[in-house]
Image (tube, rainbow, N blue to C red; front, side):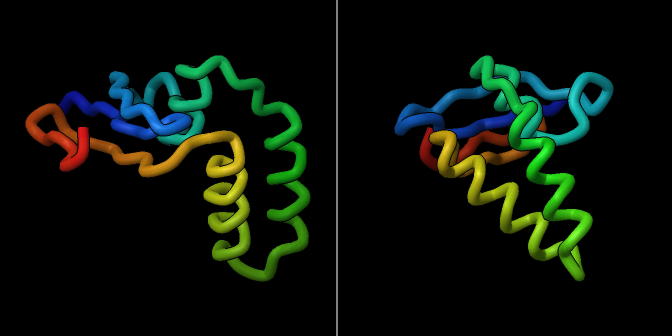
Length: 86
């Protein structure tokens, strides 16, 4: 089944094709679409993963880091779906 990601970057809605063969998750795909280097993000993410007691802290870190980068409302969609606000 084909998938797309719809996301808001710096106030503008965008839609890109998505495949798990190419990207491990939707965050990696939107960062690649906007040509954002995630090297520093990945290092910090590793540190959070090593010190966190559960997965909640890692998810919160990832979400907050991408909000600081300018992303919001990252939605994984099937081909037959459309986001409400696009």
